[in-house]
Length: 268
Ligand code: SF4
Image (cartoon, rainbow, N blue to C red; front, side):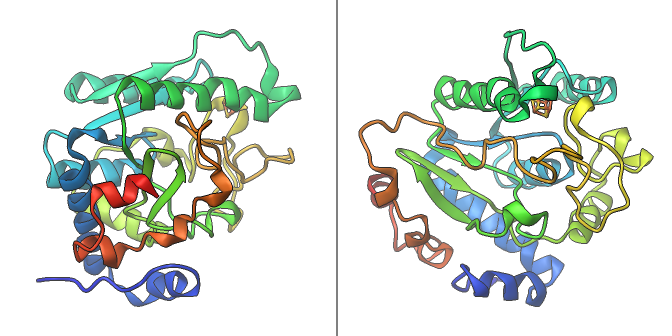
């Protein structure tokens, strides 16, 4: 069954979150992933945070391309349960590579969490993008996940020579759990304790707040926010004016209809 891909940005994106059913969202995600593997080959790589959303993307990506590569960025502050879960996952899957900063930042998360995330998360992602020669990075972003995630597109270009694909952008939290249960995907046991969004131990707590990411960086200005990998350039961009890049110029319906080639996209 072929799924029609409608123009999905701005208000239309919000409509699609409610109007598409679970099956249609899964098929749409697979089509977007298939496009990225066709256009970028093994330079289309999954950024796998090993949280629930990334695990759905990783499972979908492997269904579309069993040889897909992925990278995990970890820190010294990840909970032991997360480290064990990651080690087990990596032991089973040789296509996953782990990146970690060796810098000693002390307790910088207490005084400057933005800088701490910059050193421990953003920089290793940049290293992974360079080391794995990534041209398209695939993420588990969802537009209903929190206040900072409402203005993303399914296909974006926020820095030079690097496309970002968000294939499950339209999934609701319920549909993530639906997918994980339906396809029996292994998850971090910390979810069983009540966590809804997982991060570093000092910056993640269990909450009963409506906001899914409310337990991240609680009681700081960063509460419910971002570590920075989704808001900063990840690749060399000194020769391009980022203000001239229009991420909204790339629409899923165009790429899936074959109207945009790899060259078109990377040259924008
Ligand atoms: S989540 Fe907290 S401990 Fe982890 S990198 Fe960010 S500020 Fe540092």
